[in-house]
Image 1: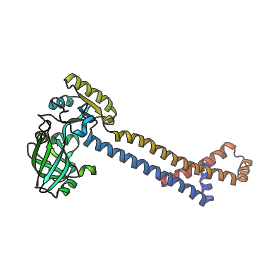
Image 2 (image 1 turned 90 degrees about the horizontal axis):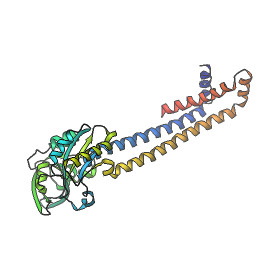
Image 3 (image 1 turned 90 degrees about the vertical axis):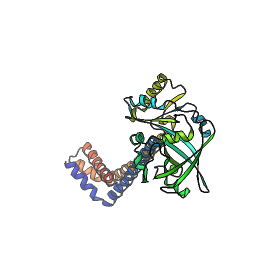
Image 4 (image 1 turned 180 degrees about the vertical axis):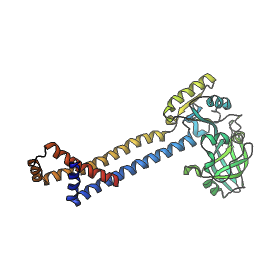
Amino acid sequence: MKLARIALRNIGRNSRRSILSATATAIATMSMVALVAYVNGLSADMNTNVADLVTGHVQVRAADYERFEQLNPLHLRVQRYRDLLALLDAEPEVAAAVARLSLPVGIFRGEENVGAQVMGVDVPRERTFMQVDRIVVSGRLPNAGANEALVGRALAKKLGAGLGDRITLLSGTMRRSSNALTVTIVGLAAFPVSSMDGLRLILPLDRAIALARMDDSVTEVLVKAKDEGRITALGKSIGTVLAEGGWEGLQARTWYEANYMLSFMKLADIAYFIISLVFFLLASTVLVNTTMMVVFERTREIGTVGALGMKGGEIVRMFLLEALALAVIGALAG
């Protein structure tokens, strides 16, 4: 306690130097905290969006679908999807599973013709999977069996359309013919990804299947895990379900396998960690430099207190306590 009091008193003897050291530590700490918070928030937001809107934690679809995705290969589909969902619901590690149909369409309204992406969904299941109600900013979600659509706000603005307006969707079908469907806009959505806001509209799954003439099949089944730490194990478990259930040609991929952005974020986390470490080393350098200056400036004082009976170890502890106090003050301020 006596050494601690002496160390705190010594900090106040040269207030300018102490303030400079504490300020440097505060800036470094603030930068590290801000950087880590930003990266963690960005990563969490991306993980949520990927899990909700893109791949889930595990994505089930035809093994060759990704290879031909730009050609809209609707013939590479998930058949008997209801049976598959029932088996997935029985898996103890599955939190939720949904069937979806992704379909590029042209939207016609008057003289307007805009490209868009239909997402056919089972609304009751989506409420469990991604809390779909939260993206609705006005109106409501479409009802199963009804020719209704939930349209992104930016897409509706492109079309000059609003609630109650009717738009016509033209798409290719599974057998490479064309089909059209006129739907009523019953809701406007704010998708969490801005690029989706100007591109996507949601249809009831049965209406999307009818539009693409998919014979009661879908393009993918997405699964969420109860424990994100066991996604790889869940992917293997779902692969076993597919093999035993006779779904030849389907593949279960984890979100890291299905989405390169998540792998990129892993690399980014390492880079940000290195940057944080650099800030930490800079702050440490300031404290070490300050402590060394204090030691050189107080050589006579060190000799005096040594002559008065203070041991070498106690003198070292006194200077370390001064450095620790400055570090704590700076870190708390940061």
